[in-house]
Image (cartoon, rainbow, N blue to C red; front, side, top):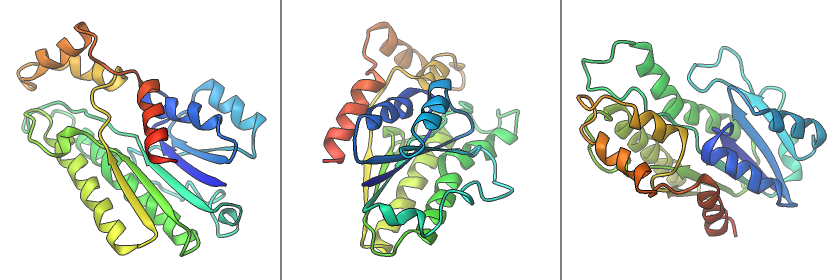
Length: 232
């Protein structure tokens, strides 16, 4: 049986991945986030042997271990593989440096896109059996590979977590890492981008045109492609 961890599950691609994984017989799903949808909460009550909710606000440094009552060495014994899907991410603040009014947003961004991933993986690696195979599906972006004005935090944080995971796979031979760029999807993140200030984000009209021209992929479509392509 596979043990899945997914972040960013209340909407968008994370929610679609959660729905698709529910259809798999040999899958136990740990979903991690600040909040969950009503159907996720109800499903976790109906299927406690298939779903576990872990409340953890990824934007903050945890004051206590949110996994304390979930992860221990005995917990892993029933599984033969771990799949960690790093899906949570934010693009805000879409601002040129020097124009970010809320300094707290800087730390929240870095925590969600980078620090929380390091923390979660550290907890998993401390508790899982040493030789248990593990796949990491990192939902990345083209922004990790190029400079986009207005996205200094997003470009750098996506590049940073990609580099971190590449080092991790070199440290542990049982870990396999896949960096998956799903392209532009019809999600809440795209709504945020379309409402940004052109002075801070010169590519605003390009991203607005994706919606107008129907060029955004659906999260369900992308979720199907990911599960078929990387979890055979």
